[in-house]
Image 1: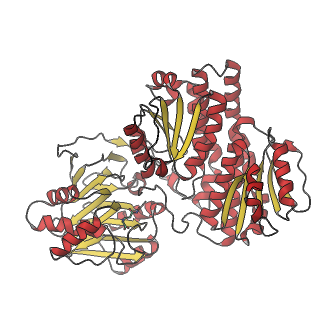
Image 2: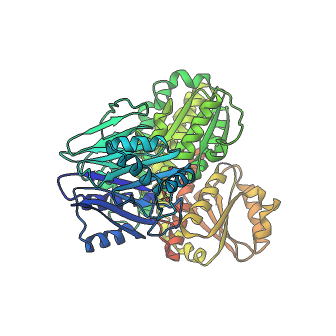
Image 3: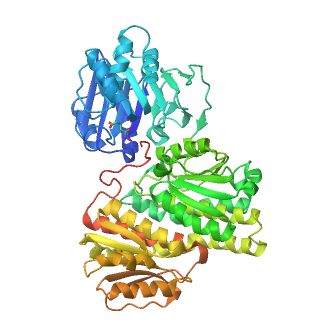
Length: 609
Ligand code: HGA
């Protein structure tokens, strides 16, 4: 959330900053701004709204410079207004961009006011600008001023700082929020993620917690949290520019939905190469997995629903207890920890702050081992874990997660089967069957994608509704939850999901002819139960929209609409049934004219609490 980019070069950096912000826009899109050093002034352009508007304003104002910082905001402190947009400045001498939340901002604000600083915004960020100014004007380097200032901040931040009289320096710092340095030729960069600077360089250094960096055109100096010089490895990013482009699609969400057969087969390839072997999760797994007495999954949002699905797999296939908890809840409760319960965190970006903090808390409580399921290599959560399974979904830009979710499910399924093997619950024949199921999965998903025209036809009926219910049972209940979340995230229709058996215990009261009820009805052991639950809806006038496996003999009737998904694929069925609910949400949102890739109030990579 909130995207930062900065550049120091021998060329005009404004195009670099603007392109970088466009790439980072998925992280926040309330407002955008840049500040550059231009001659004897820091010039700043900020606009509420999208980067494109700010870009137009920067062009009109003929903004150019060899050193600058840029920001795209997802507001946490202070409304979405131009005065609250970053960069923030202090006496036009210091400019700062910030991702994160300064928790002691009120205390610092009072102190700085006492020192004569006036505040122009309601943000927590402005205190950073003034604090850096305060130390800088006392003498010394900008780097030292940032060091002194950041040591007095509590909370989370990634920042980029420039000063009027330091045309050859860009200073950055990181604590709790992602930040990397990009190494160019006679030019260097900072960014929240590599997409922002990919057209300039692929060589990146990931900053560690507490690091502070000084970038000049020719080099980078880093110190760690203990003020010691830090040598960090240089990585060559494998993210391709093409993967960040829309290509023939209208939206990233549409593109990413359609990329799922490929994302899944890339992810499955790792499983096929290694088999369901501990090595799939890292070197230490062979030693750790046999010791386990349980699994505790911690995640947020869509990843949490992946965790809920995994619980069914882990308990039924591996015969080991599994509980799943929302990370932001877990981290603040006095939880019971069994050191032999493996903590599994799930995060697309690997930077989700609530999940990261939950992991740290789990360690404090005594959990001995942690496994991360993550889509971004070298991100913070895998680095803080003993074991990791990297999904190979490729860059996911759409705010509503799609291919990250289905590939997370593959990783979790592989964990369930591997644990089952280690525990002697999975025979060689079972293993061969599971591998075969995985091999067929991308084809079944492609088949489900072909249902798009029928789903699009349904979407018209949903677009005029204010509410929707999603029902599923067993393994497919989490998919109902995911379907409801997708619909509310991007179409703003209020949607709830229930295990179908729960209807009569309350939510049935909501059902009338205005309530569309989506039913995920695979041809599994619970099908007859689901059919009874559907009768309960029909009897109250509710209109049913059923996703039924091709082999489940469902027929359309009055008030019952049926789309036939592929033939039942067994234990991996939740992955196949995710596709239609994603497409339903996408087409309903299109019909309602909402911004599919950048839904209101949301952003991706949730790096604030
Ligand atoms: N607290 C700052 C930055 C917000 C942020 O990082 N969001 O992800 C603000 O509200 O401007």
